[in-house]
Length: 422
Image (tube, rainbow, N blue to C red):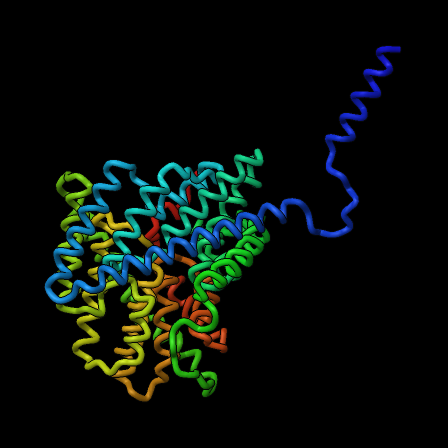
């Protein structure tokens, strides 16, 4: 009799241990987890942006020659933070962990990433806040997955969803942010991670809502391009032509970065010395060309609305590329997507100066798309992001430009962790 009771008890416990199957919808309790992650990601991004804006406004008071010591000191402080608190790594490390470490992003270095990136971005470095946000929100996804004891693809998907929520918050493009979090992992094998697309979309949507409520950023077009009017099928040919020119600039940026990387690695030195040197170089460039300071979020509108001579535009283009390369290689923390969009906008203006008969909006957006797709290997998400950020209603010319930049990119990717590995 006791044995029968035990068997019944075990059967009842097994039944209770199973999920209750009364839900007739696709909706599941995992949706709540993705939504929670999105809410957290939006709140993190909102708080980060508020602090960044306050710091930027405080440091913006130092202009003229004072920009050199301010950026040098900021670089030194960021280097000391990384040296003593821990090296948070860069986008290469995030991609490697998602691909080869079962999607586990370690949150222990988040304090170092947050503090160092705030100093680097707020003082005027040529890198944006997108990479720090992606790392912090992605590792938040990993942390949440561990709390709920997720493993395998579920954990990886939650980490990717966290990355998407951070990226979406800044750009205000849930679909573009979700696709970017997949494409950046590996341009040829993004389909391997498409199990994460629904989690990423859900987290991105909730993150977008929270961030918009806090900051009101990403509501509508960010950059004030004049309205594009389709003039015929030749526009697609022009988009490809502009993209080819911009891709050549992308190659120049990649090799410029490699040059400075060799230069900084030629002699072993502490990270804080490298960031100090980087700060001095960046401050000097910003002193002579103030528009090259900062990551370009607001500066792109100044560039588009201004009337700059051709010689100055060439100077801005060349030294902005150098500034981004120095920022990346000297240990400063941040992301290079918005700075690359700035370079693309400058190239579009140069093309319009040389050939005034070209459509300015088409030239700018084609160059922005091509250079970013060339460097990051993300043609799909680049297309959607630019359509959102610029309010460009004709989707296909951007896609043509993005694909041109993608297929004409160097065989060896700029993000080394995108290489094929077993």
